[in-house]
Each structure stands twice: as structure tokens, then as C-alpha cells.
Image (cartoon, rainbow, N blue to C red):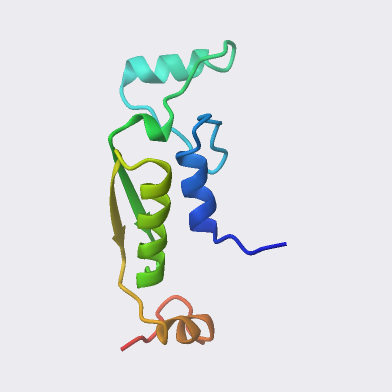
Length: 114
């Protein structure tokens, strides 16, 4: 077995050519009309929009992102679907030395990274 990062797995689900259903991503509809359609979808087969149907994708990574993860995102998107613009946001940009400190922090709600 080989290791595949979770971020890569999610991106591959989003940009898969067959547009399979993404179990890790949920579409949240907005407005009353969309809410009614969502209610009817429990009784009928309603196609939900797929994340790769849109020209812009926002990814927000809570806890931080490393430069290698940013490179991974760029590589996966350029390999699978180069026409989609991806905007990556995060709570912080992590260095490689920050990851062990975060993992072994005694105060998990307020880790001390400087």
C-alpha cells in the first residue's frame, strides 16, 4: 500500500473525469427555491452540482498549510483540470519545523508556534 495524502484524495475526487459523487464534500444550497429542491431530492433523484463544474474553487485549510501541500495542490489541479482557478486559504503558513511542535503541543487549543 502507498500513502496518499488526504488533500490529494479530496482533490482527485473533485477533478475526477467521471464526476463521481464526492462523499467528503457536501453541497449547501442557498435560497428558498434551492431549499425546496433539496427537500424534494429526498424523494426523487436530483442531480446536485459537482464541485468541478465551477471555474473557481476555494480551499480553506484550518490549522495551517505547508509549502509542500501548496505544491501538491498545484500539481494535482494542473494534471487533472488546468482550466479551474484554485484559491487556497489557511489560518497560517507552516514551516516543516512547526508540524512536530503542533503534534506534541500540550495545549492543543492554543499551540505556541513562533
